[in-house]
Length: 481
Image 1 (cartoon, rainbow, N blue to C red):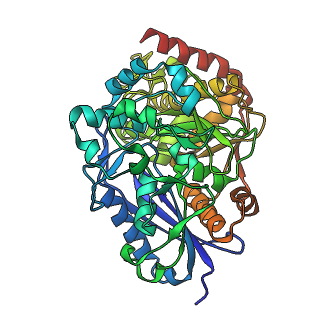
Image 2 (image 1 turned 180 degrees about the vertical axis):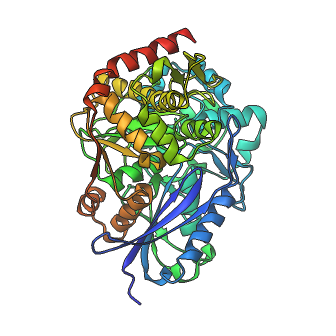
Image 3 (image 1 turned 90 degrees about the vertical axis):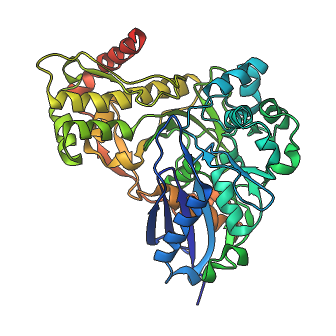
């Protein structure tokens, strides 16, 4: 049987998705999904073995296609800390990106080196999300445990390792560790040593390979039967594979609404933001993906749907029947603390409640609050020189919400586009797999396989006229809490 497919894996916080695409044109052939264990910050941890089990469950759903898979790659959740012992068993559960327990450890790292030093070397400043802070937390809470590790890696590195037997990483995903230099594409072991001294960092960290390179081939030890022998790509972070799946270009602004929220663009040059608000990540094509991330996005609208006792369609209807400004209600959506701004112990605030407040106003305020927070990040990106002259692209699970689409258009005065390939992260991982197999530049395949975006919302003139006032009200509410 001809090996004419590539497999892209999106190993996210919530689930594993595998997408099969035709090697000749990128057409989607099949998809499969399996859940990951739920997490609830401030303590957000998962057993790496659960990621592997979910991947196996997905591949079992696709078993009729496995012999056709020529290459496979992984886009995985960022920042998580995986530590393996000499037998390749996890020393403890992986602390995930949205675990906020390392907040004091991030502050301690900033006392050891100033924020500007970190930003100049890594593009980011230590915060609870970054892997370097999780290393410091582990050393403080479990002294000596890090020194027992024989391999220290990220979640996508772990899945690549299980597939190929080779411990490798690449610049996109690793630029979120806090000890990788995306400008020079090298580890900064001195920064890792600030978190945990006396570790042989040169031997425990993965080998750095190109984003379009192969990590190896699926080995016998993986136990995946017909998939054995398929080329394994380098893997990268989930936002990086999503960017590949959507084939974004310079000038585009992407807003992703998943568990967390992100807003980012692509630039040829890196961003070094000493304030820590912008993470100057690398992408998987040789460029950069400056990004602002919030902890609270779709989880906010999910919570308010539960409180109102309505489904997705009714929640959207309520939000869209309410005029801009939500009748004076303003939600600051820091339900589980916040990452940008860095307020790990914050809670949500709903200001402007009155005796005549309606469900529609609450629904509108929830959506406006999530989007206003992300758009503040967009302002920071523009100030840092990230162009916003192209398309405004909405992605992530909540991108299917009619309310999110329309209210984003209203708040920005811009048309909103989405990618009809909803699982763009898995789709982009397939792009990376094809690059590893064919040795074609990743960007070339992303452009060739690009799925035309769909126009899903244009600004309502009356609501757009109120946008400046809505956003200013949001800023003033933040100042008061």
